Length: 592
Image 1 (cartoon, helix red, strand yellow):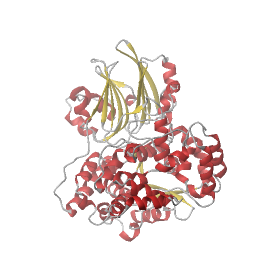
Image 2 (image 1 turned 30 degrees about the horizontal axis):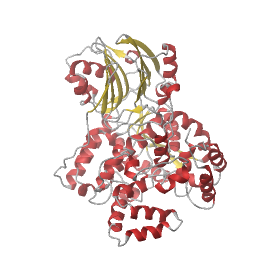
Image 3 (image 1 turned 90 degrees about the horizontal axis):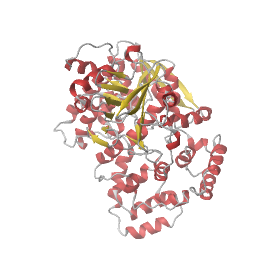
């Protein structure tokens, strides 16, 4: 795992580019190299920080080049030895996946190579012969890649801290969406004119023009398959995915939260590994938040060497400054805090860890999917909805306000977004001092597809929540401590299979029944079949105690030209008396 960086036609010196590259050295502490090339008679600097996982020899360092291409690469290609078998070239100097990529691009071309790749990746490729620069991001969006083209200077970087500071200007629309949802989605960043390359896309830059192409998408056709066949296919692919993700010259461990997904990954890993595996868990002392005891019980069943750490408010205080540095832009998912600590804790034992992310999106595990469908059906049958809406709105209560808005503006998109958002539409005016006009929450969501069935909610999460929240959280937290996190449930073949399964098959015995039935082959069902908790953090409690003063000072420090501080202070007092604004407050604390 690594970081990549490129500057084209820049006024910066090579030493200045090196200094920006070093800001990302946590992603790759084993080697840091910057080289200069000529691109349309202008300077192109390519930089790389390396975390050596496959082939620890310095010959595998980057930038790596042959007569045609130069490559800087962040990620892992799990099938690269299979790709080598297809190549005519056989004079390899390393067993690294970077060298496989280099010669595959040379022999097969860019797009044909991309479609062969099974892995997580962000790649910069400079074609010296045709004088073009390519940026490529993996299908799911596991690895980050930012880019900008301003004043004839083109920059790309694994993290925003690699992009020169003087062109980072806050974007108000991104700020509103961040406060509303807790993360910045689609291709936007927190800064004007600095973008994320979308998952499953590649960018072509010829020195003056940019073209962006999509190379993969979720399948639309459904398989004609019964439930037992689906379980068998998913298990087979998941086993193969986990085997592939054990490819490493260093020891691989696994995160184990005690939930379905991480338990399944850990259980299968223990079966396919040739030695006892190591599992890692974070616990909480606060009642209602802790799953560490479940994780410990599962670890016993799979006979793993189990490690656990209990997370407390002092850990939050120690991490607050670090989280702002490593996440670059505001990030409101508070579970990033225990994920950072889990990563630091895990890195003390291993350099690579498997994660269970993706199961809820692929196999319809979130409660809000079913809740949205059920409530939409009930509300759509209500008589005199306008009158009921008016009555609910007249009651000064958050839940009544929610009902009023949904009843009056009934659509599945609006209902889902109410559940999905941290800041509700009627709270925009009491949060900001600027006029904010969105015709509906679908517009705020920046998503133009209709949400008709439960799987549509899952697709929305796949395109938004998964790459821009969940995967950002895990990537930044793990790479902060030079730990490589791999996500076997998000093998693109498994993703394609999951979205090819009919909804009634995936929900035949309830949400995530396919994954539960597979897990029951390894662990007794009574150990894991319980209500979903998620990776929650007791912010509600901490904002009334240890974090109370820090929150109060943060609200006072907000720009009064943008924020309605008077109303926010009212919410602060209401929270102390029993109301709950924990998500809004945590988002506000993340604003720079």
